[in-house]
Structure formats: structure tokens, C-alpha cells
Image 1 (cartoon, each protein chain N blue to C red):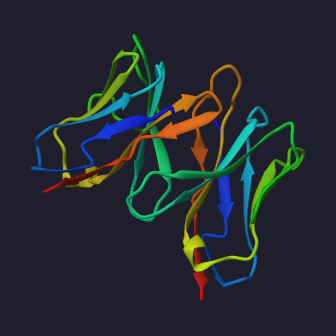
Image 2 (cartoon, one colour):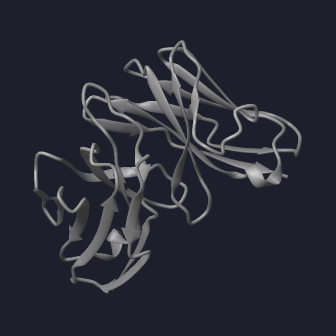
Image 3 (tube, chains in turn blue, orange):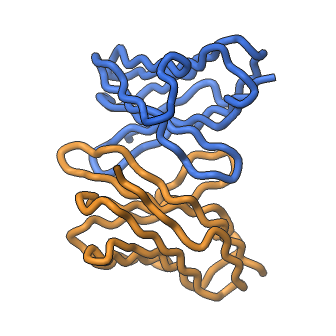
Length: 113
Length: 114
């Protein structure tokens, strides 16, 4: 139980375009979703926290206008990377608290060319 | 906010040896400390966790110890096997009726040589 489905798993986009990443909680209601970014051989860095029905909370240094987060329902949170550039290429992963810890999406490998 | 420091960054052991990875945290309100194993391009997998009301927890070859006073916790893997080779992350968060954000350590690349 407590599965988070993340799509797409891989995406390649052209510089200047936008990419949307979705995380769906399949068998539970996720009122909170954490969004992380992971560069190669680095740790997971929290970008923002989304809460259903309210504005997301962004970590220091994360551009809220560039990384748009929407949590419009209890089962869906989305991250949109707007006007993507090569430096946005990274592994993005969502995570939701569950009853005894956290469950993670499978991650999205974004490559901006 | 919370800061988690993890050492060493790389660890190389022979098969059958033990491996120890250490982490310190800064927020005394943190009370949930999971350890994750991550393979390349995959999601982190929980291998063991400990809560602040417990000093030690063991699951077969894996154990975690927690020293709340010193704000550090450690992962111990005994009888290591080549399939234990991966990146390991410690993390800390405030848990309760709902869990707060997880702060991760920098990661340890563990290599187990046959």
C-alpha cells in the first residue's frame, strides 16, 4: 500500500520549453507532497513542499516562478519546470508522508537539450 | 532548519567485512531517522529506520544506533555482500501525527569487493 506513481520516468525537452511531472497517490490521500531534485552523484535536495488546496512552500534558493507546483487534489501533485534550460537537467522525485514514514515516486530523469 | 552530515562519502570493504556509516543532525526536534539505499536512477529504498524513543534497532545484517544527546546515528552492515554495493543516505525529520520534510545526508558510496 501507499504507492506514489510518478510520470514521466524520462523526458527530453528542448531548451525554453516547459515540462510537467505528475505524482499520483494510488491508494491513499496525499495531503502533502515533497519535491526533491538530485544531481548526479549528489544527495536529494528538497525543492518545495506542496499541500493540497494551498500554495506550495519553496526552499531557499528555489525559484517559485520557474518550478510551478500544483496540488489541486488529494491524489495529484504536479511540478512544472518552465522555460527549461540545460542546467535544469536532473533527477526529480516526489515523496509523500505515509503512516509510518515516507513513500517515494519512481523519479523523472529530465534532460534539457 | 535541519542539517544532516554524513560520513564517509565513499567506503570500500571486502566481502564479509562490516561497514559503518555515520550521520549527525542539528535539529533536536527531529525524531525520525531513516536509512535509504539507492541504486542508480531508482527511488530510495528504506532499509531501516529508528525513532528517537529507541537507541538501537536491528534487522538481520543491518542495525542502526541513535545517540540523541550527541545528535548522531549510525548504520551498521555486517557480513557485507557484493549486492550491498550502492549509495546509502541517512535522513532526519520531525514526525508525529504527520511527517515533516526529510533532510538527507550527502550519501555514502559503498563498494563491497568479492
